[in-house]
Image 1 (cartoon, rainbow, N blue to C red):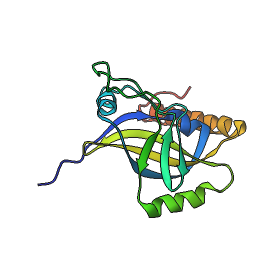
Image 2: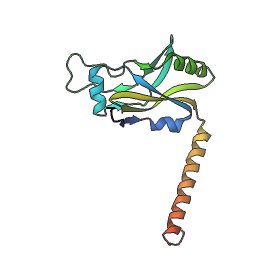
Image 3: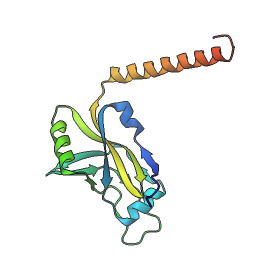
Image 4: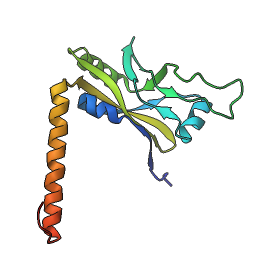
Length: 160
């Protein structure tokens, strides 16, 4: 009998989609301690300012803030400790080569539970310029206006 697969989102990094152009994504496991998992189940996490690095053939998640567990004792974790990401050797080597291209970074896009384990979706990203951000906002607003116009027309109302 197999487990029912459930993807429960814990947190998403919406700022990353605004600040970066996502070129590729990958799913990785996260090595955690017990009180971190309990705190994640309560949703007490922030992906803001977090990033991943590859050091000595291992992938590390830095800057991820998981709040201390309120009912934890002296065994509680430190909120911003460096956490190891679990990937296959071939994946790490492939991403290490791509990461050495100029201007690319590894940024966590979302954190979620998959079959009871904590997973992080990493994105290989390139930073956007200010005009890119303005252009994306203008495009999104134009698409929203078009959708509103079609909706009004389908309901038989006059366009504004």
